[in-house]
Image (tube, rainbow, N blue to C red; front, side, top):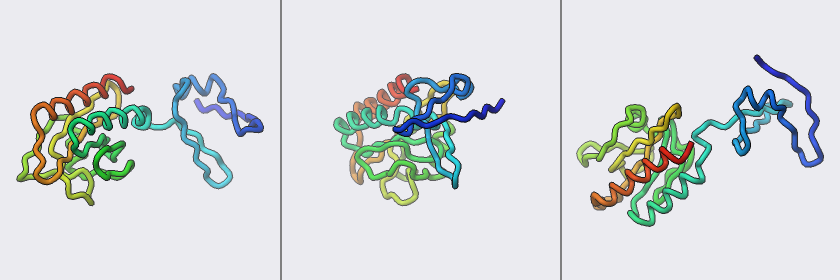
Length: 172
């Protein structure tokens, strides 16, 4: 059922979203909304779930990077969400190989003879891949991209795996 109502805007540009629309769209306090201007129309939509929690994901990555000093990113099947220690801008499309790995949801410690690259314009291959599986949510993955000659210890890989598990359980 579509609901269309007329609302007035206050002097600071705020509008009230009626309770029936909030219920229908499953909006709650603190949810991110996207506004888009299309001609003379203003479209309002709930942000995709992968956008919620980005700041928290970034803080986990920054702590992990301070420990292992390896390029780290979190991606969906479509694009990079956040990164630390490597230039992978938010929203950059991932390669088909990586999208397939995310969809499969299997952990991978990469072999040097068949590299998987996170995006098409980088020279740093993915050296480890940890799925972030959340119930009823889009699958995500934590990627480690080591520099040439950098080898990660079992402890560093374990730290990354632990961070992926924490993100899966903490960020809804």
